[in-house]
Image (tube, rainbow, N blue to C red):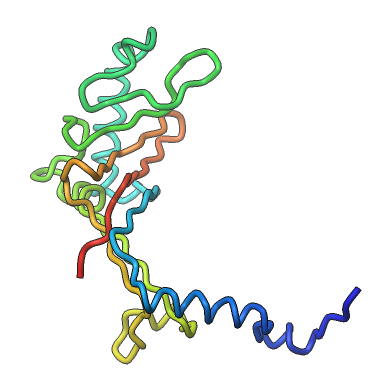
Length: 184
């Protein structure tokens, strides 16, 4: 059994093994930059704001109107652009997924704010060898990240987004699937 050096641990200094592993991984990343990275993500939004509450109300009414067509067996689980994705132990649908081609997806002309945050979301990831204070990220004078990736929905056949709606809680989530990093 070894003795733990609390003074080094309390200062937050990395162990020699951690430092060596970090150096190996950063060297590997620098010599072979990441390319063609894709991510899957879920983002949950608060739809309490008036601009978003109208969309949630339309979505809730539309989904409930489709429930009879979505239930009743595996062959009746899909309406074009809408799929029952989660059911309870009795087979009742608890969550649906709405594709961008569905009339239940936010309309870009009269639900612009909801459409903007659900259809045009961009995910940005920045990696720094030397940690920075997250509060200063993106401000003038912030060090450049060692690795910087931006993921945005392109609408091509390889990436997909969907609005996921939980019927009981009325939570709305955006799901991004196979969203590729933008080329630099």
